[in-house]
Every structure is written in C-alpha cells, then in structure tokens.
Image 1 (cartoon, helix red, strand yellow):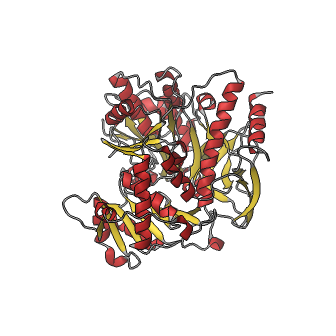
Image 2 (cartoon, rainbow, N blue to C red; image 1 turned 90 degrees about the vertical axis):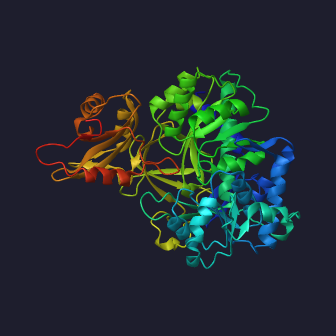
Length: 582
C-alpha cells in the first residue's frame, strides 16, 4: 500500500459510520452536503468549553496574562451585558474593530454565545471604510479601541442603526458611549444559554473580503461553517499523526501546554479559526501590539511558543531575526505559512534553519470558505513547497475550464468549492444575481489552479492577474517564484501593464534585501534561466521599500499597476526600466 492509498484508508476509517469523525449527509443551504456527525452544535458550545482548562494560561498580551477561568468569566459577563444592557438579540450584528487585544477575543466569544452575528472589521481600514461596513451590516453595537472609536464617532450620523460604541483601552479620554472596563466592572451576572436556542445553520459571522479588487463584501458564515473548519483541522492532524506512525516514525507527543504566537490580525480568516479552536485544546494564545520580528523571537523564547502561522513576508523577517540573533528556540515545533502564496526558497529555508526539528504546513481557502478547504503538512510540503494541499473530507473541489467543464489532471482551471464551511452568500446581495455563488452551492474562487494525479493542488494565479502578452498567458505566480529565487531579492510582485502593440507586457516590482545591489539586467538574466522569453519581465521597479500589502498579507497589485503607469508607457523603441538605485 503506497502513501496515497494508506491516507485514503485512514480517512475512510476515521470518517466512516463508527469513526471518530463520522460523516453523514444533510441539507445545508438547500444542497446535500457531507457534515460531521459528532461536531459541536454551535460556537457557543466550543467557547464555553474553555473554562475546563482552569488556571492554565489562555491569553498573553505583551506582559499581561489571563487564565482560562478569568477569560471565561469575562466572556460570560460581557454576554450578559450584550443582552441586558444593549438589547442585543439573536441575529443582531455586533461589530469588533481593534488591534489584537484580549478584548477582541472576549467580544467575539460573547457575541456568538448570545446568538448574535459577530462582524470582525479590518482594523487597517479608514474611518470611511469602517463606517461603510457598519452601515452595510446594520451593526447595532461596535466594540472598538481608541483609534477605531475616534474614526467611527466622526461619522456617527451616517450610522442610525448603531446604538452604542463600547471603547476598549481609551487612554485619558473616553470617546465611546461606554468604556469597556467600566461596564464590565458593574456586571457580575452570567448569561443563561437556555434563553437563546442555537442551531448549526444559524448565522454566526459576517467576514468582509479584503476588497483588493473592489468594494469589500460581507461573506455570511454559519456556526456549522466555522465548526466544519474546526473539525477539518482536527481530522488533518489525526491523519498526519497516523501516517507518521505507519511509516515507523515516532512523532513527539503534543506539548503539555500548547502555545501559539499570533502574528497576524484576528479579524482575518487565516487566524480566526485558531482563536476558535483554542478552547478545545487549551491553547495559550500570545498576542502582540504590532508585528516586530525581534520582539517575536523574545516572546517565543519567554513563553515557550511551539507554533505560529505567518504570511510569507513575516515568516522571512522572523527567519532573518533568528539567524541574526543566533537563538535556537527549541520550543518551536511548527512554523506554518498562510494568507498568501509561499515560495520554494522560503519553505526550504524553514527546513534547513531548524535542521528538520521544526515542521511547517499551509492551507488554501478564502474568506468565503470560512477557512481552509485543503491543507498540506510538513512531509509533503517540504517535497512540494508550491502546493497548498489536498482537500479535506468535507471539501468538494472542482477545477473548471472557461467552458464550464472540469479540466484534466495537471491542467489549469478555476477552483470551485462546495462544502458545509462555504459561506451562504454575501450580506445584502441577492443570491440570484451572484456570479460568485452558483444555485447548486458552488463558490467560484477566481483563482487559477491545477491538481496533480495524487490530488495535490497548486495555485497558478488569480484570473484577474493573468498577463496576456501578445496572445500568450503569463501566470504571475510562476514569474514571482523565479525572481524570488534571486539571492538579492527580498520580495517581488508581478503585474501586467498596457503595451501599445502586445496588449500587455510583464512588469515586476522588486524589494531588494538590505545591502544588496540588484539591477534589472541581473533579474532578467536570472529569470531567463528558467522562463520562456515571453514570460521574462520587460519592465522593473526596483527599490528597498516593502511592497504594499493588506492586513492579510496580499500584495495590493492595483497600487503597483498605478506606480508602473506613473512611470509612463514603454514606447516602440524598447521597454522602460526604472530603479531607485540608478
């Protein structure tokens, strides 16, 4: 029995009728779906279970610590405030907008516990963007820190549905209607869950898309959607452990007190599932005021962090700091990547820097899928660093060509997803007019992928980012991977820009590593070793500044195209190349 067959056998046993993760069919959103028979009934059931971890640490924010008992007490008290003081009922929207403070997690847990819909807002948004989302979802309550409170209060007249703003960590002046610590200090009752029955298909969250290609849209996810993601993560871990034992390996036992450093925003779907899962494993979450690689290394050592997930630029910065400082960080067992496509060089670097003792992983999903639809673990990932994994047992995946038919093995097509963790649609948008969600339950991702004979999926590009040069398709991700191999390149993004004769030409915006000197000619020669001539960029913008990225780590390609446009067109005599080092 080969590895693929052994994996299939393990999954069949685990998800069979007597398995720990038994599947059954149910109607979800009017479509038959495989669902987990023994999944929790609601997110309330999950977060309420955190109290059983007692005096173990639940949260650390910089130098402040909170146990699971203390955390659960705050959740219960704020849940009571939501219902009694603010009149929040089942289905009402409660928005959260702040840095990664412990109060974020308390507000989220309390909101879903009372049957309200939590709307985590992008803390990087402007006041206009925050107000736009609050108006769109009709939020009745906002829990926000000082910066976000101030921005929203300036636009309060635009938000008639908003009853109150509860301000977290206000400083010397309270700008909100209420101050978090003050209202909690006066409430010692606990919410009675029996007063608000919950069903798996009740709405739980509205997660807004990044808006990189237009106005953000609110993807509506149910309790079942989040719980399916939770169960999928558990299945993946179990399968990986059993495969390791079948190979004769002896995987180390799980840490007695698992601890994870949170390197990205809690409002993003790459990190929210970890927050939800923490209560099931007693995971200790270590939060930071802002990302700082040197501080991260200190916290990993001090708190004995054993896992973290980081977008590729953050992972590179962390590895740079580990190399610079010379620390070994023996507690770190998993350094996973996510949020954006990684590179072979980065994954190889994780393997070599830690000598194989620290594993890695990644997954692939979108805001509309409430987390990953597939995942890949260390053994496979080190061998296939450009893959994003194989589908979970509940994930249905199609790779669809322009004609709407499924393409063959290793052929490129759009990824379509269906499963109980896919959002039921966009808030305030008629499903009948949606181009992203089909009537039979499929979500069209807009990503171009290919799937090999073993089921591993590889992201090729976003459909909207494919460069069509003289009738030839150029996939930006492929060019970025090759340019990123150059030893002087810290970060790179490739875009298409208009060309008077070819339609589009390939342009690259490059951030060089500190101290490196890189020219456009160097990069063309390097790329030409691996790529067909029509794929090699003809225009470069080279500098030392970081590429513009959103909170999820995705490059803002619209901004890069504007930068290239500002350089002026490439004339018939030849391409225009600019560098801030020339």
